[in-house]
Image 1 (cartoon, helix red, strand yellow):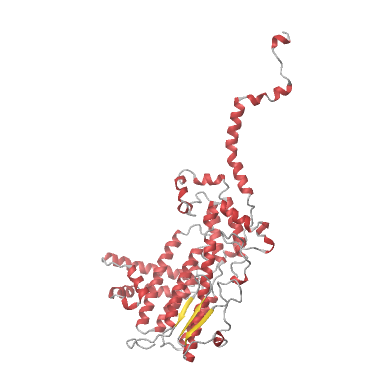
Image 2 (cartoon, helix red, strand yellow):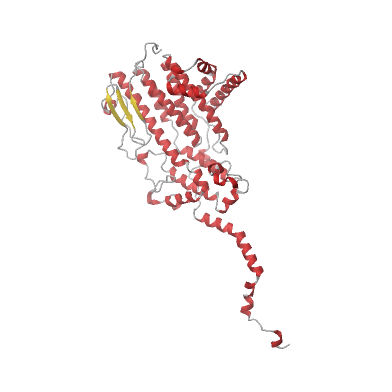
Length: 470
């Protein structure tokens, strides 16, 4: 057959690229691109934030040894059991109890308490006694730091806080009867529980503990105003308050617990449930049953969140336990609240600005890390409260000795306090807690920080009906 009869011949180069005109080639290429694109997107997202080592010794941190009989939570749980047994008996007998009534009493004073409320406390006296024994323990542990769920912990904390309210009311009742030293024992028990509740525990536990301290401090400040109290009684209480303050666990412990829990949750299937991601982000709720986690996997989650959390924790552990005046400045903008280390670098040379950007991109990290700045603010206010309570008691002791509040802060040094303390909510060491004497029988101690300690000291003379201190 001649060349003319066989048709035009293609050059070798034309044959090589002829497949580009094939329908099947383009179809397969598109399919392959669709299949591989999620992986490419994921790799691109992961490339934006480098991995980082865990910034603390997990094995050492989780090695917790408590002597037999010294775990406060054993007593707290038993106290809850006793209280619930009485509650069940009340329910069986058709007796209703409204907790709102007790909240009104705590706000307005014990004089408004009804006979049924008094009987309710009497019936739960055994539970309160066991709870108070728990506050004398040297340590506490609700669950292992490696626990993978805190649902039971949240429920338990609510029950524990009901007991705190009962003990507070019982203290107010004792005060109304003139049994001031017994009332102080109740308030000091609540004060001790503040650290025990959060020891070796989640940030949530520590926040509940701070609430306990706030409750006890408010009651002790009011209690210290009673003119029937002498310097000896006030000195005894001040000594115990200082002992509680010295045993306070560093704030970083709570962050480490939350970090371990989050890392454990992110490593398992169904990680969005224990993290409460769906509840925090309603827009993702429709995807809950159709693979929300698979969708987030495409953009690098949960690995991006794990890496981001590690970088943030590394940054915070360097500074968060220090007083505010000793910390390095914050990086801007403070979305999570990151400190600016020397050389503008953080872990593995990853700058705070890039960490902040990673937090913004990761919806998981954005939600799980929202407690960092809030928690640090609460810690600052708690420190302010602890300093303020000691100053109030010292000033009240001075009042008992001299018949008036000190004219100057120097009057308290060195017989009542070693030195006038810095304001925990101020970023410079020379910014001290504020003291202003309004009159010989009235003075004010306060912090200049937002929502800081602020109390006016007074002296109260009891009514004639109230008996003397036992």
